[in-house]
Image (tube, rainbow, N blue to C red; front, side, top):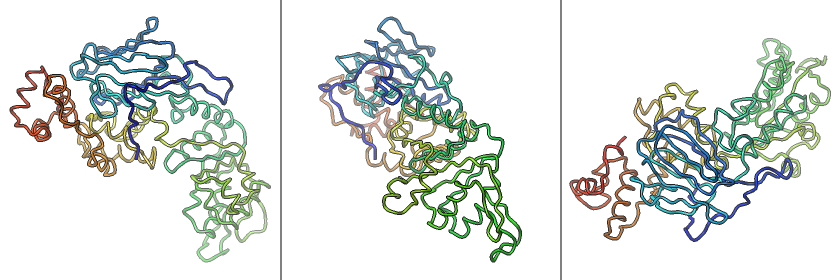
Length: 466
């Protein structure tokens, strides 16, 4: 499970602040602020802001806009739960510090209310109901302040704020125009078929995109599926079948889970790659084909070759261009982009909203099944919410289990001074979405005491309720 990385005020992330790359493969990491998700407006475009060259970033409520003035970046967000002046980021040495001495509701960093905090790569900031991510990583090309709709992409599915992934997608776009085979590595659910389809569409090949899961078929059935069969060639072959290779003639054949191919099928596929022709089962006459091969696997084929589990000559034929897709936990800067794109494809998703507690779980979860798991989580949460804001109860059990394990622990009882008491009260109101009874139980007090404290500190209890 992903854990927030603790960092105290005494430690500040040290980074190289230069921009650009020494060469195409050596991108320089730079500090960035990703405005990732507005809980009330998740369809709003996320944005990326490079902090290189700045000394201060200020936050406040207002019409959404970003303005650079010398070494200061002023960020205004249409979040009614933010104060007019809602804290700032300040450069200290080689790193950045959150400083929020006076905003009404404070800032939350990695699930805990903070007034001052040195930031580390991957820290999640909550400003009102807006979630931001602090990253120190290679940046995508473009203006220093770049929103999702300004990203230069050849396909929407290839949009990213990550500089390394952007460069990988750019190279893949150039490769797509050739006939070079493409091998895609990546964990389950990282979007290997999505990338394969993008390669096909960018190739301008006039034939179809045909996909087959090599791990879902027995060896004998796989050969019939790939190469076709003559009527009567085996039991059940009641008609001639051309097979998927010939069906993909002029287009792209996507071989998912290629590592699951049995040795005999590997040999038969090698012949197709070498000769560009197929022989159907039960036939003796080869048929020429014009097919672009794209394969994918979550296993390292090179390791399988070394252990004798995959043919070296077939690997050499497939190894035209290799694309490695990072897991979702390594590209959290794109989480808002992905939520927005997936909600667009989900019935009712464009009207979706999140409570802060449910959005926290999205950013905290390790997503072991990657983008596919995120897609399924949103697809079920939207109808369960029935038009209200999505709560943790609407999310799948693995995410709810994290909340049950006190993913965001209640702060220890504070000293009896007003600042500490107010900070704890705000934190609990945020965690319990304004449920006064739940806050009272957490603090061991009566409900009326919570109401008295709220009046004393000028807190609007209704603003926390979802």
